[in-house]
Length: 291
Image 1: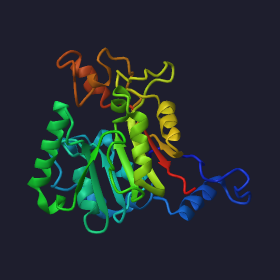
Image 2: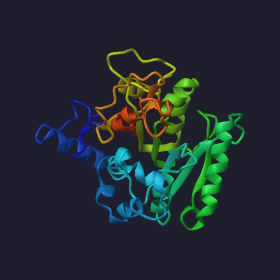
Image 3: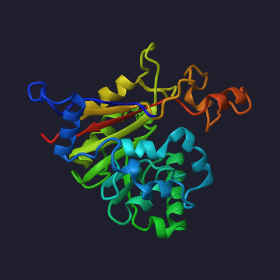
């Protein structure tokens, strides 16, 4: 069973009820604010499980489910099929797009915030072209996907104050590397409704080493990521060990990319890295306060 720790960013000490258990008080506060509830509706939604098992997903993506835990992660983020959801940098493979787009098609809204159209990055242009081709190849599932641009705070990833949920997976290190982490979190904050939730998953850095501000290894300390979000105005809501991997020693010469699925060292120590599996990751939710 995944471990989830609920944090209390909403109830002030002087407001906390004394006659109910702490966990009940927090969940009551979440309900009162109208927030997506961590571990809520999606966890027991057969429609979501059906899409995770569905034939619309690529085989390479399905093979990664044992590391990425899509049902548990989306449930923890509080996903419902009637929400307005923004995914940051869905990539050409569209791991989450294959699930989110058809799930939200009937009752919700799905924004895919990809690289800016004017990016000079070759990789960024490949992502734009590849993602467009993916959407065009399956109009039935993707016809309602709204593609927007993300480049720090230079573009609106969704109309300001419209999103219920913004999600990002293993991207914080990229923004640290290019010096736009503060702008990225500011863009998320702008897009969310008051009471909206930000879900963040990232390669977890070691606590016995200082954080490299450029995150050249790909690893980010959990406390560092929390500080970035709080600087933008977010409050920590909950943290989970859904995507933890204690086998990950985080001491590889080429950083996190030694591990699958990248295998940057190719055949060198391949069996060792395969046995470790994908990286140890923290999974967090933050809330945009209502006031």
